[in-house]
Figure 1 (cartoon, rainbow, N blue to C red):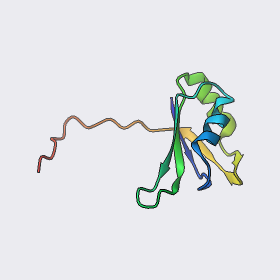
Figure 2 (cartoon, rainbow, N blue to C red; figure 1 turned 90 degrees about the vertical axis):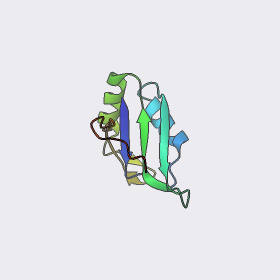
Figure 3 (cartoon, rainbow, N blue to C red; figure 1 turned 180 degrees about the vertical axis):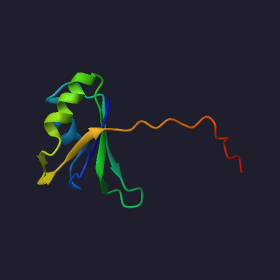
Figure 4 (tube, helix red, strand yellow; figure 1 turned 60 degrees about the vertical axis):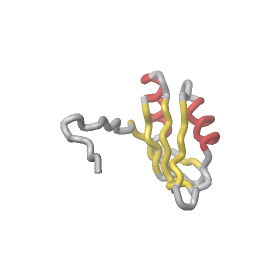
Length: 91
């Protein structure tokens, strides 16, 4: 299950998040989203946990919790699929 973590401190690292979520189960990957121009965190990240039960437990326990002096928000990430009905723009 893919989780979205919002309201992160700009200094929060992938290692910190991985360690935090690993307390609830296995973490497949963690990705802090960086600004492509500055390389600074945009304040949100994605964490993938392969077992839904572990992910739900992490989400329940960590939502609205404090991390690096910020109250983080954790929810299930929306998985967007490509819309097959729209033609590809080949210009």
